[in-house]
Length: 152
Length: 123
Image (cartoon, rainbow over all chains, first blue to last red; front, side):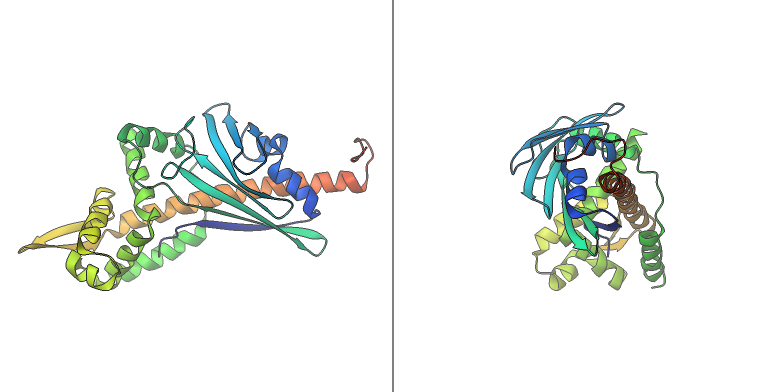
């Protein structure tokens, strides 16, 4: 089956509160995610992620439960207020693992066809940049799937 | 260029919906099926199936072949591959971001353990 959500996890050799700070504080988010960030860190709080080359994306904080849970929606296309149909939900879960921290991220709710034609074209163009990375796992899975379907 | 972007966008939206993914799965299992057949298998109406098939068709993920009064649909594997590859790229982006978070957190934790040239936290 084609995945409906992206789930990734990493083990970090740092205590929970340190990882929490990096994941949620704007000066850090503006390093690992965008070129700069503003976040009103409370449920319903608004924020922006800005890339020098691409522009600004608006986010809305959904859940803040330090130091375990943080989620937000980020909207595509650029500059639009996040809502159902134009945004995805990003959920971070942090848990202690020995002396370190296990950090898990789930991105879900990829936009449905609710956007206006023009908006969607813009959205797609903006998102096309940077999709050029490689990851073998899912591709292999699909090759298998495709193999199965062509063997009928 | 923007033609390609449009296509990617439609792929994205097409596979985002759980019902459409189940339709794709069912089509992969059967090889070919009509909207009526698919509606018999999934907890949705024939009209809903037809609507979802239209979205999948527009995204190029399925193609229909008219036979008598009905259209028989089949998956286009090469397009499905492209869709899933795209999801894989999103996953790879997250791997990069998580790696960046790890670097930042670990260097911050090291500074906390050995606060040589950095300001002390909690002052």
